[in-house]
Length: 264
Image (cartoon, rainbow, N blue to C red; front, side, top):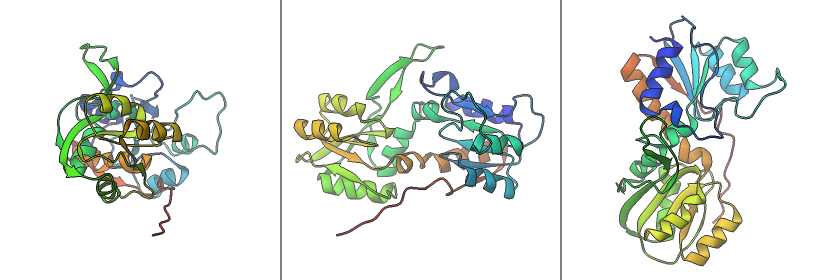
């Protein structure tokens, strides 16, 4: 068992909250650091929705750990229908790990590389800030080598590896041996990937203009889904928390709301 502060400090040890991006609101969003209650179970999710909060309450979980913070934008009005209000009413502390884990030493992008079975080259494709304590570069993405494959073969591999509900891609029409993986909405890595000789970028939430730019550059660009490229972190967090504190960790599916429809 552990207090919410002990859990917070443990998460901070491998995904430092001080390294979150300027737009983010990671950390303890609901609850108090001084809460003395011992927590013996946590529910893990990508997003804290009302069904997730209800599942946590009915399942007897002591806290919720999400990737995206339950309070993201400035709140000027307390809406009792919001998930953070329900969590507060039920006495459920909520911690978000968002850009801290996205850019941790072992990041979500590194997890994507491992999930695909590629060789991680250790290069950060998109650096946009520094660690305030060490001055080390902080950013997003991971560069990897892979066996030669086509755009369609890589897209099919991503579909399987990330269990993508829907997948879109443009074909760079070149054999692929080097790939940049970047979890969530991170098509900003496209130009870096091109400059470093990569032939493909795997990310999510790709807008039309980025597909057009990838096509112009002769790059394969794959949108494997925001949820799908980030939900892979939940088993990782569950394993670390269980090993450290011996607490029960549940992984919900109540936050997976996007469906896919396939026609051949």
